[in-house]
Image 1 (cartoon, rainbow, N blue to C red):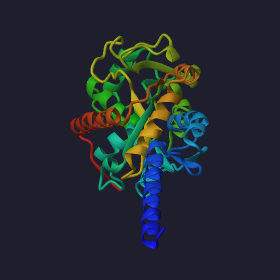
Image 2: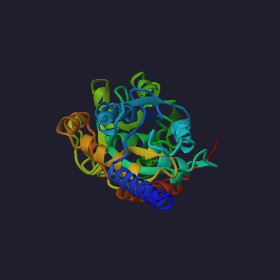
Image 3: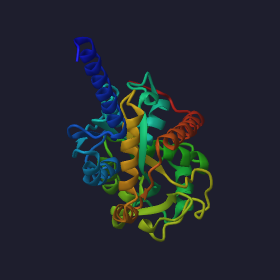
Length: 328
């Protein structure tokens, strides 16, 4: 074989090998090359943290590497969310986002530290309805009596921060109930917020049903903020059943996975599919249902649409409630 023909054959073989490798890579789904960092922008024990740990306990095997939960609390979830904005778009860093961080925060603060729209929606993990609970020493026995008392005197309520779901949900409730004002006492997490309610430092709290149900014996749950009663709070009426329409929501606040800006679709799709598998497992669904949460994994397109709709809803509530945007 002459040299010219030999070079031609070698070049053709190299080109063919390159093409086969490209096809093989295209056919092989993405897998993590090292442990995946799952940022939780809240304290351990909160709902986002619980869901992150339920997810990570199973999903790591499917994605090729284990998932390490990394709690980064502070500033109502802003610190952890900001970290995602600067992470590499390689699937190695994810965030357990929530209604707090991505649909409410932008409407309560000036010059937000991160832009929620830049994050890439991957999949929802679960939806968590809320419930209104009061300290046992508040002299009322039902929702109607609480509303009547709150119209006469300024009662207080705790939340895990300004511009969080607990804050926005209470504003929606107050507007629907015709309560002119309540004293908002924000804390740095849901754990100290519920402790303040248990200790009688505040009168009320609008909290996630898992949080309220865990402490039910020491509280008075008055109503659930959903269209259906919750098995985790048996005997507690919905807002509509208690005589108040308007702020009830069929699902509650969401917790889901976000990827860094510009994360490729093939990576997002793999993580989204594995999330759906994990969250649809009977043991996972039953465990969350026992806490009052509803396991449901919406894919990237549906998740994106949910965020748009929810953002519009909370923007309206913030505007109608006369929210004064905070500076950050």
